Length: 298
Image 1 (cartoon, rainbow, N blue to C red):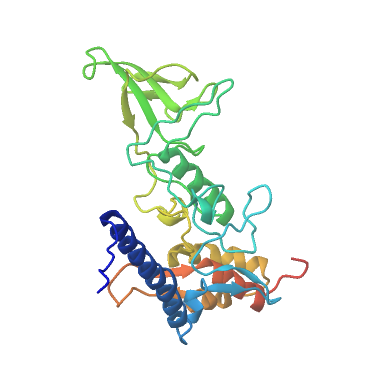
Image 2 (spheres, rainbow, N blue to C red):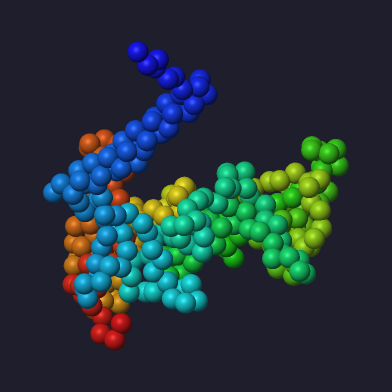
């Protein structure tokens, strides 16, 4: 008998590893993707599997119902005939390749004022205040909010005391209003409020947000002034949609009731009846507007 030739130990180990790699490649690199692709073509799943794409009146794909869009002109100004989406921090706005949030929390209330050569950085509070003011002007409603100045920045003072953090007030600076702006308060506890000088260090002062006289429930909804965590949210609240309805109806030369009916058609209720809040898909709503109430020359 011819003796059986055995492979060296190292060779048998490498051969076994190669077989495992081949089998796993066929299973998870070929068979599994093909199986999932086939399942995704089942009626009812096909649309979602292909990205929930939506088409315009000309039949061309114009986006996805899952990803929001900015309905603004080249200068970034809102286009009046469209419902506006919520703010976005994804790239330059709704960039699906740069999904992300602004990473600013509720304690972000003091701006970094611009100086010569540096653009500065607005706090989250000032961003909210500025957006609320802009929405109020666009929709012709009261855009005021608590802790916001009339000129759309955070109403925050930097206060100095004669005993560090307590005692008599010796100085008060409106931290987010750069000179020569007029401070939103003339005085604070008997001390004249002054504007902030860009580049000056106010870290030694006590930060004091001032609520002001704005209503506790602002007319401009929260989703109109805050971005989503992904920056790609295609939905707004029914309250924000209703706020915009008069403007859109006027621009589309139709009644507010007709526009509100479309809003209702594109409103999704709570998941399972209890989870989340009702939302309005802005992308689908604006496409429906273009199809149902096109504006001549738009």
